[in-house]
Each structure stands twice: as structure tokens, then as C-alpha cells.
Length: 247
Image (cartoon, rainbow, N blue to C red; front, side, top):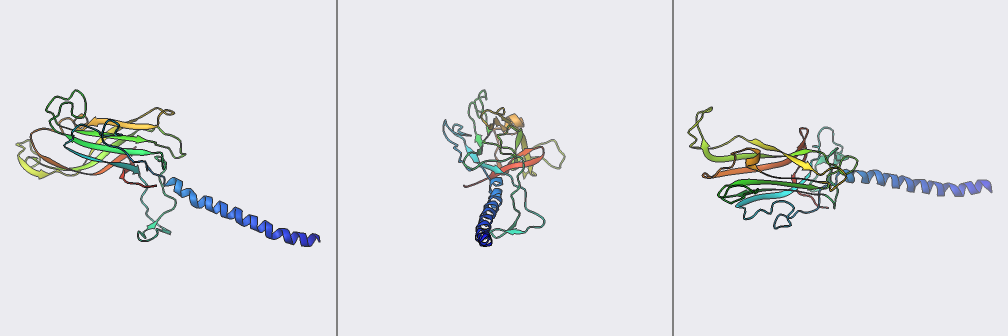
């Protein structure tokens, strides 16, 4: 009878062990999703309640969201994404020190050109001046342990400009009367200030191109500026970039 009782208990014990194993496997399988959390809360850009921007009568503007920068998947890649984006990949996602949380984090930027306006971008700007307003707000920045973080970082944008203010042959000091396209450059860095730890967990900056590089925006001539990589840097490493996310 004792032997029979042990036989009856054995399937039950095996069943419990299998359930525990499935639960543990589920925990392991679900853990990478936390590492892939991103800034999913949308931003507002217009009016008095705008998260960023909201400047009066901008002549032109570029606005968007920022998302955490995940390390590029390289080397030996043993995983594959589902179709139709059936690329190889790495698990878990890698983003060690600068994280967001789904449904909480709201990261956004605004670049707005204001032409011939008093107080363009910032109060005290002379009437008739032009400037490019630079704004960023990151609400909900977390460290690798998931704790609110007040780490310092910078905002940088890769730009390429075309105008009629080139001289020849280089190097030269004028006259600047030739049309041309400049080599790509990083505009910045623009320091982003964060609230003290334990307070609002908000990092933001409100400044202008002429405050960062005096004389970079002038009246009197036309220019076309391509802006194709807005990103955050910390200690030389990219920690967030412009992009989109959905929950």
C-alpha cells in the first residue's frame, strides 16, 4: 500500500514540477520585454499646454518623439524576427543605463524656425530677429535598475545646410557669395538639465540655435537645413534617438 501511494504521488509531483518549470520559463521569456520598454506616451506640440514647442507663429518646424537607443545587433545572432521583418537578432534587447517605461515615459523634441519676430524663441530677443528654437523634454527617465534617474546628458542633431554664403578656394575669408552645400556636422551638444533625484523625474531644455552657436541663424539670406539625426548623448555614447514607439 505504501508503494502504491508513492506511485500515486509521483505523477502529482511531476505535474507540479512541470508547472513550476513553465512558470519559470515564462518569467525568463518575458523578462526581455522589460528591457525593451520605450517611451510610448504621445507628446503635444501646440498651444499653452504643449510639452515642447508651442512657439507663436513658427515659419517652419520639425517635431517628434525620442526613444531609447538599443545597441545594434551584430556578431553571432541566434534569433530571428517574425515575418515580414524576418531579420536576425539578439535577445535580450540591450540598453543598459538609459531606459523608459511603457505608459509612463514621454520623450519629445521641437525645432522651430521663427522669422522676424520679437522675442523669437526667448524673451529679450530684439524685434525683427530670426532664430531657431530648440526644445526637448524627457519625462520618465530610468536607470538600469528601473529607478527614476536624474543623469545628465546632451541633445545633438546632425545637420547639412545649403545656402549662398560660401567663398572659394578654401581656406578663404570672403567674399561669401557662392551657393554651396556644407559638410555634415553635429549641432550641439545642448546640455539637458534634469530635476533633482526624488522629485519630478523630468529632464528638459529650452534654448535657441543662436544661444548655442552665436550667429548661426541670420536674417537676409535663404538657407535649407537637412536635420536627419536628433539624438541624446551621454559620455560620448548615444542613449536615445528620434523615432516612434507603440505599446
